[in-house]
Length: 348
Image (cartoon, rainbow, N blue to C red; front, side, top):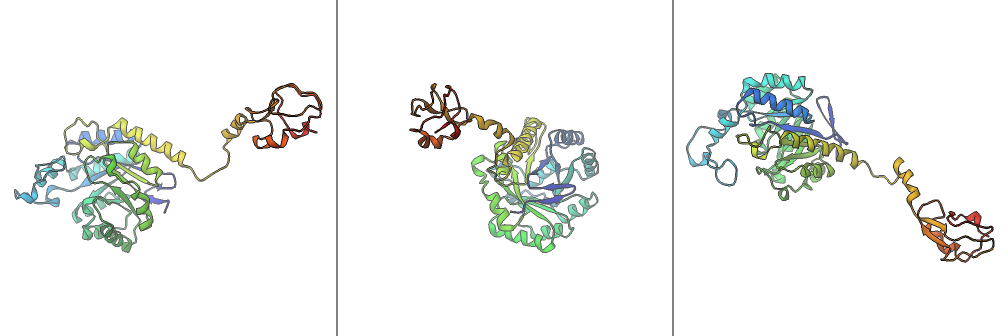
């Protein structure tokens, strides 16, 4: 499983999980709110903030036909696609300020483009990578155009069959750009039992790329579990408050939740470590609390060791417990006080 990938100045993998906060539509059409979200994202410990770059016109057409109305099964049921994207999009004239603010805050900033014009628009900001959304996994012409820019790509795989993922990966690999794949469940929010996190190491192995998780659950435990399975990237939606109106608030983490998630993941990274059976420094100090053989009754020279005067007890300064059958029945050389650690040199 590949362990590392470079995005901007950050090396991802091998114990360095890349934490992406997705602002999406949670600015609710207000630039000041967008900036406030970005500052909160920085304070929460994220490595990067992700935007979405589109307009209603680049996503769909304004049409009242049934095909263009969202059916049941999502939190946007009944809305027209055109209206939803008009409500959710990030105005293009904001991008310069948002990219600049992210740079001031020491975060990477990049976006998900949804058509060629948005790719061309984003190029002026020299983004460290591009994100391909799950819904665009099958838009191979768009993926090919994104890859032609030569920047690393992070691609979500929600709803994708293995064959569909393979086709998209092949397009990117032909372009020779770095790629990471994210396991994603395209339900909003996603229940934990739908996540199938074991897919993450399979993605990494099957396509020989770093793998991670784009998580729409409201659980901190889900991304932590993903990291223990080898996820090198975690992406989560971020909102100032789930009480705020907006199309994405319901499946986004609030600042303290995101901060707690980052802390938990950083702790998990430290705990995962490596395969090791060597004692740590603190374990060396704890060895004295092991059991060993001790004299538990005062003895005189020539006395025989029995189960009444030798026991396996704590601490661990005496002979190891496995020696009990070798010492019983033997005699001692000299007088021994109760509470003496048994050693071979005490025996005849």
